[in-house]
Image (cartoon, rainbow, N blue to C red; front, side):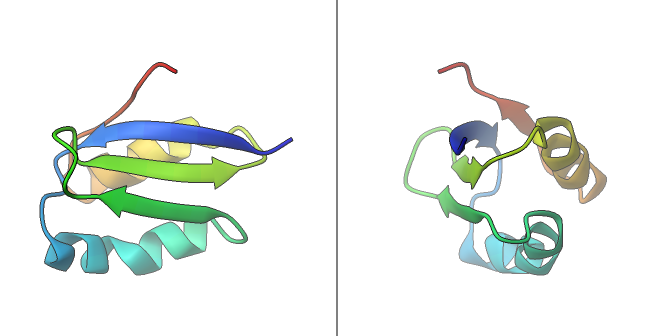
Length: 72
């Protein structure tokens, strides 16, 4: 079952999103994801069929960014 996960981040530029792209692509193989840099929470949306939330949060924190899951 595909679920949409939504995260609040501090990724505020295309440059930062581009920097994170290869890392997210590797982690989220076969998943759709995108940053909404216009949203006040700079959200990262991920369509995924598995339990990967902790890995996403850990990856962004490892790269120096804030990341916390928003409740649906």
